[in-house]
Length: 133
Ligand SMILES: [Zn+2]
Image 1: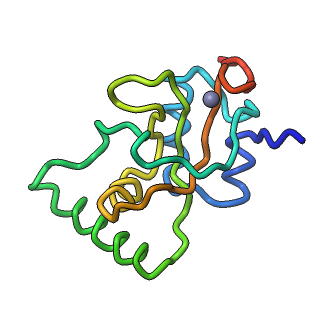
Image 2: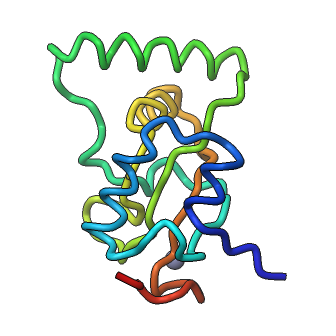
């Protein structure tokens, strides 16, 4: 059974905090609209997510504070909102572009969690539909 969803529908079901920003990236970088049924909910290997998104700026105090809070939440096994990813051809950055959830991703990375819950766009791959924009 097909479980392809549109970004708009996922957002209606489980509110994405930075929906407009993520949608902007989806449209500009991946040429897809919020009605393209290219999304699946998956557990993705954290090591496969864009490693350029790993926070390495020691002066990003608010970023580190957020990541610290999220690490604490992960340790207490709180369920966090899914990160928003786009499946891409693998390269030295990984196999998934990150559209939303940078702090959650960094927290999972630092906690050494192998997998993270994600909404994943498959645009023209894995039997997903072609870009529509
Ligand atoms: Zn794919």
